[in-house]
Image (cartoon, rainbow, N blue to C red):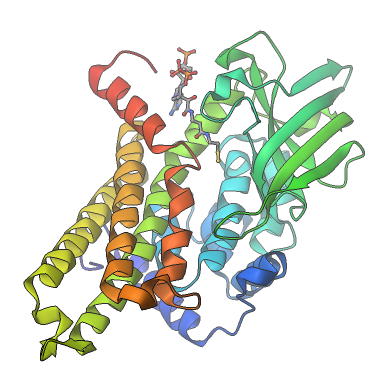
Length: 381
Ligand code: COS
């Protein structure tokens, strides 16, 4: 795949070097110790220089601007090996992207070098209990008070809640609806900002609520202008939805490779599993899902890197297709492995759990369909 025309020599070298580094990396990777594992991965990825993919060149990044293909290659390669490695990398990218893409040079200078060296762990605090898919309905308020804002409200299902040093928080500064939202960089240590209830999921990673109670921050911590919050969130997601597709691709590719090895070696009815036509049908469907996902993911990333102003449609297609496809691929892998497939400790059992949340976070599959249809019909946004 890396010989596809979407990539240049730097991309190919990056993916090969990351693969080689991962093969030797000795990092805590235990879902029963998810927080410690994530911290360990952030440190290791920083030390290896891989977080340089998350920021622009002047702050220590790999290329002058954020490069979506590099982010996607990183997530695909990391997800192939470990969900927690992918999570640690993805959150450094998603949590800092609103700053890299939309913030003042002052905020960029303050945070981005520490994102690269792993000292600043980041989080993207958008969702609320009553505002997940319907972002424009969020209720957390940021009230202007002189040269400060006072934030009050609660966020839900925030990855890295309680672990992050920096939260990019979306809050209402104006009237109802999308135009009343603004974005802020909030240091986790700010008085009035605290982690709420922890959430345990089928593929464990740091996740929980956040509480803001009279949390006062300088007005200079605002990202972009007042009222820009919704577009900042959507602009960030336009980049990161392709990377979610890329992570799905990494999980699916691993499930396919594990299944192929199994189909070649498992013997039954006097032959290998791979000699059975029904198993071949499964392998064919998996391989086609993997290739189709890769094409949509890297098409979206390539168009963004080429300078397309909006890749809303392409990134929504990439995320929707690749995450649904990964669900199908991992389910088929479990089926091919039989009883082993549902046994704790087996790779395909873990992959089956790892891929499920991808169809929900950063815009559920149903939201991606709405986004795609609106773009195709040209009815809104
Ligand atoms: N880039 C830039 N601007 C965008 C945009 C994008 N990708 N998408 C929408 N906008 C703009 C629109 O052009 C519109 O601008 P104007 O007010 O100037 O006309 C404004 O933002 C509002 O857009 P829209 O009317 O589409 O808003 P909706 O409330 O209808 O949004 C969806 C609908 C469903 C698309 C949005 O709420 C969404 O993506 N939800 C899922 C959120 C999500 O991913 N949650 C997970 C949290 S992160 S784990």
